[in-house]
Length: 233
Image (cartoon, rainbow, N blue to C red; front, side, top):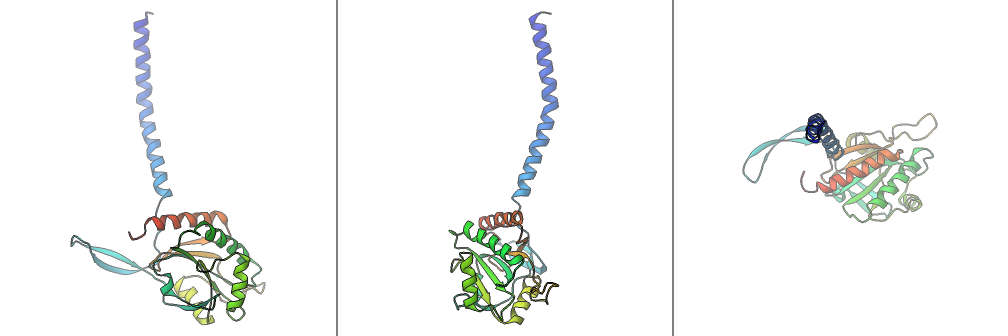
């Protein structure tokens, strides 16, 4: 077989291979793009409550969904200062319910909260709110001492106490989670292990297992995404 004929055969084989591989490559690229799109999906909104009409700068009217927001609250921080829902306006914040004498899940949850604090220490837009489920025993002084175990930074991580009824109502009707709802079989105060991600308009953007580091990793990634969306939602 002469070299010219051999060259034509090789060229034909290459052409056939390319024809077979290009569609496969296109599918793989599409799948990777889809995967990337999923990985950067903005945290969803929870609990739609109605619709509203919005007029944009061009005068066009669009229908927008309204979502549940956290109602007004007024509690006392570990520094004996008033802390209200006005203080979280415009912030990306993470909420939990716990109590200082909790021997079970609370230390795990607050170890994860400490991770979050350390990760976003340099971003004033991100704060943490820990609401006690045992306000009878968790005074401001007790909360301050407890926070020191986790190197809680004043102005970054707030430990909050108030009336039992107000705290329970906020958990149940605001964050839609269980707190101060009787005792477990072990005699502990029954409360959720969830960390709740909130945006600057006091809307719920996610629930995460506060005892699971991989779930908290997802939470921290979602915080970054919300920061990137600042002012766009």
